[in-house]
Length: 137
Ligand code: IDP
Ligand code: MG
Image 1 (tube, rainbow, N blue to C red):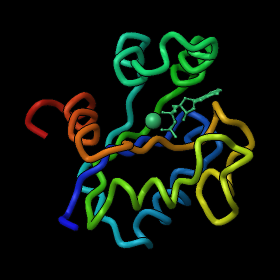
Image 2 (image 1 turned 45 degrees about the horizontal axis):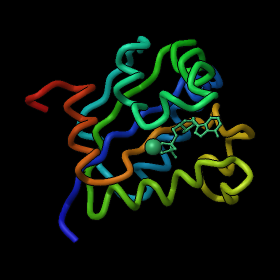
Image 3 (image 1 turned 120 degrees about the vertical axis):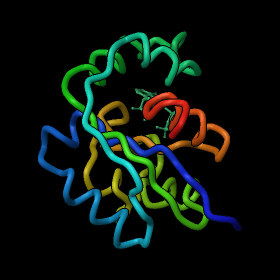
Image 4 (image 1 turned 90 degrees about the horizontal axis):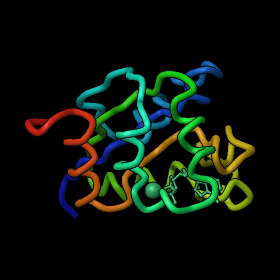
């Protein structure tokens, strides 16, 4: 499997709870490289693009209010099989399925406020990196 890039985002609950360092440590301890990182505030426009697959779901307004409740930390994470590997260390989307030892399993008790985003395919990783870091990233 070739070296891959994925878009990782530490969500507002991660920042507010002072967990940035712990989560980054797990990413680095696994062996991935963080090649770019920035803190930013998101608006509804970018969230409607980023979560286009969820805009019609009843909980979408909850996602918008959560994701605009404070700054996030966006990162480009690189390494062998980084997309799938990051999804494994992040843990499942549904909080009750996120097992102990994963980031969500250890730090989250809700499905909405679940600490971290990671791209779900290499293609989406590249799209998301461009969305948040620009066309030349
Ligand atoms: P993922 O973050 O594991 O890729 P997605 O299905 O892409 O999961 O959903 C994006 C985000 O939307 C989740 O991380 C979570 O914050 C929120 N979300 C997804 N499904 C639900 C739900 O059923 N209830 C509330 N929030 C949800
Ligand atoms: Mg997703």
